[in-house]
Every structure is written in C-alpha cells, then in structure tokens.
Length: 147
Image (cartoon, rainbow, N blue to C red; front, side, top):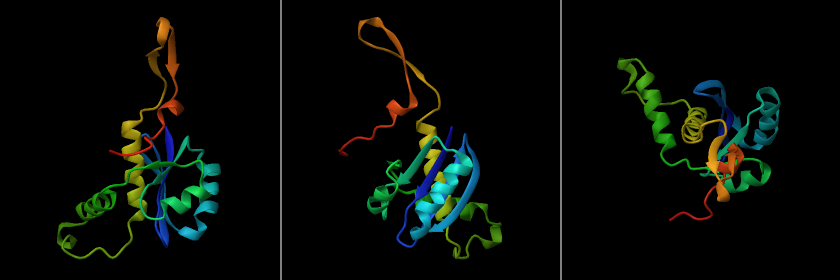
C-alpha cells in the first residue's frame, strides 16, 4: 500500500511517500505551499491514504487537507534524529545536526502506520454467520478521545 505522510510544522512540513517499506519520495515543504504540493504528489504517486501527524499545526492543516487522517506522532522527531545520527560516519556522530529532518519524520509516520495497517481485506464474521470481508477503509477510524 502506498501512503503520503506529512509531519506538520509552523514554517515547514516534512512530506514522504512510502510504499511497503520503500521510500519513493521525501522532501521538506514550506507550510504555506503544502496544499498545492500535496495535490501534485497525489497526482504523481496516487497514494491510497494521506496521513497527517497530530502535532504542531495539525489542527489548521486538517481544514486544508480534509482527506488526511490524523495519526500519532509522539517521539517521531527523536526517532528521526537518532536515525540520522546512526547513519553518520562514527567520527561525525558527536557533531550537532544542522540539517532539518522533518522529511524523515514523515517517513517514520508512514512506516508506523503501514506496520499497524496491513494492506488488503481481512476476513470477518458478521451476525448470523454471514462471512464478509472488511475493507481497509473501515479500519481507518480513529478514537474520538484518548484515555
């Protein structure tokens, strides 16, 4: 399954298109240009789902991207930072990171969502013993409130 994930921010957003563990595209976009860029990426990559991290700016961006699903982004920035540091040569690991990594956060959002939402229909049994197949869309609902 192919997804487009967005790590929202005040000035810039990370954007990534991921399919079954492969990163097809990643970039950092100015927040003001995000709706146009998402529209172009939807045409270019035809993602099945658009994901929007529920952090900074998500409330204002969901109004501009009503098709997006809000997904948890707790600790994704720290995980992206750790991944970048681990990928550096050993002699550079102690140097501070100067490059933005919002696009890598978007990759992690997509990877997390794909890990918990496998593609394809799942068998389920409805009342009366009638077999039906549950589609991916019916599994996308988010809880109304968190405990």
